[in-house]
Image 1 (cartoon, one colour):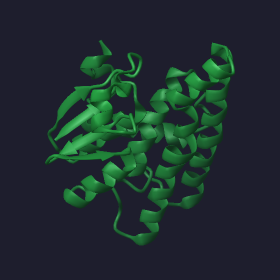
Image 2 (cartoon, one colour):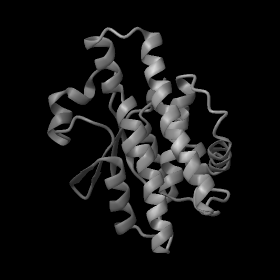
Image 3 (cartoon, helix red, strand yellow):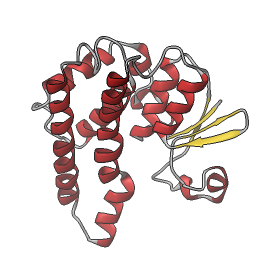
Length: 212
């Protein structure tokens, strides 16, 4: 497997966690977003969306982190990203999509650059935008954790699922933008539990070769 990744990309971090969780080896290829390497012809030939991450497995290219995780779960089912019970699986998917569909797209680097380039947001205004949508999304995430009766050490009981794999990178990015995370004690506790595991700890952004 080959993983095209950028150290600060939360979706790339998701995939690094996911691959480590399943014990899958891969060769990393570093795509610098600040240098616009994701818009170069050579990368667009691989992934026409011009986004990271991208995973190449047996010559086929897979894109979009949640879709790649589904692929990995179907091709390497143990350990699974989803629990067994249908109701629990729906709950985990919903939590994952709060991060992947409600929070991340509004705070993606493309959006932040557009706000500053087209609408001339200052850095402070950009950060206010980011912090607002983080608060909106994490408030809903925390509420679902609290109301579900399903959360334990992790988002669903005491076993890592895709919800945890989505949550941790988003909280990392929120910390980078100085978001107040104190209103989300259960999410913070889950992150702390996750960071005790090598698949989360060893794949974090600061340890990636392209961070230097």
